[in-house]
Length: 377
Length: 226
Image (tube, rainbow over all chains, first blue to last red):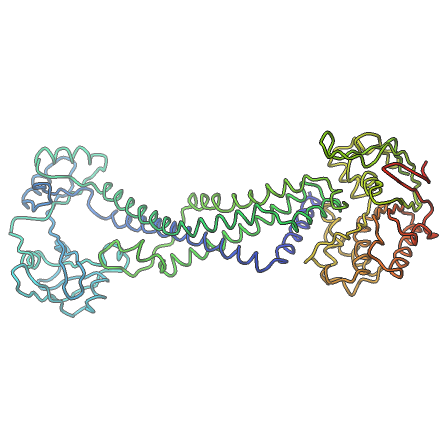
């Protein structure tokens, strides 16, 4: 066993010396390799973390939303429908909700306005998301002017800045009282944007949705799981988009690495011949080249993954922010919670380290099966 | 003792470029002696050395090394035998560029599984013995012709072989360096090693170090055989 270990050590030592001989070429390869792993791992970490973030936020949201549909479009629903929906077996709570979008001509952004309901805001006061506060330069105690549906101006005082923990979807949020909401948008009393339901048992959701549809045929029922799936699909789509954008660069790297790994130079062939002539077996030569392939690809993989981790979780993915974030209408600035999906990491490993190592070994095996006496001729 | 019986080596068998390099050679090489194989280019000297040194297999015939038949050994055993028994000095030197002299010398010992420290210790002793200590960390391509030649001798001795095989070792050396090399051969012979040298340098063939000269032509023994 110790001889086996010593043999591996000796051959690994020689491999490292051998790699250091061509510093510039191997450094270029290593840098390109690390960059590719970094980009792929960044996209992977970021879309995963964003999906988890969205899932975490949705975990606290209602299980079902009932919306009135009129001529295929979302319409206001009678607020008293909540009372009938609340009587359905399995429904814990049903309450009307008021929300809408407000175009802010000052910043050119759309804010999401939601009636606070139980949030307990005093009339004339609002709670705003981090993005709204940032763009309107409004801190607690400052006032923001809104233009109401009838052209009049409504001045509301910032009472609270919403916590950064949920910045991903709350960045553009403005919480207002019901009275201020109706005044701003002219929503008639007795009507709500939609009705949210909380249920005791998630398994009963399809049955409750069916019953709700029977009672109010003009409504549609949106389940939380549907929302989650939509969010995930959007993040997957954005991640895919980014991979396609990076595709050109990746392809160039693959061609470069493939060429480097598969094409043995005359010098490399000569060296293999020398090693065989001085007493190396074919398997020793292959072992050396495997170590060489692994040393390059494994360190590039680890380097790329660590850089991607720092990029995504320490700098909030500064390079990909415009594409992968922006879930809220205003770009939020926040830190993602570190999360690593090991199965995805394993896939990345298999897609980067393994092909390179194999591509290094096959031509070596071909060159190493020659008779050692060739170097004498 | 090395014995060859009716050994033939044919390259590219069955192809239009088929070439017979060795034609039925039978030869006994005494242990602890220096034998010089001479003959014109293409006479089969290098091929014969490769066959004796287990670097290639004969197309037909048999070779015995210290009473053990080597021609039918599997690849792995043959490599192991070659590594332990033979030290090679090539005409082209065959040093690996970019590696230090020390690493070049240690190459034959790496796959044996011997501890690196002990390999290094032995290499350092050999460097000292051949006056190469100042060049121990120099890259192989920075050495002069004579130094590079001595380095290949150090490499050949790394696994303490009983047989030294040298193919045209003085082809690129001037007279002074050739005499130095013969001096080294004499030292190796006195240590009890068997020496096999191929070439056409009269300085070597006429040297008192050489015990026997075997003359080859067209893949056959012309003189000094048996």
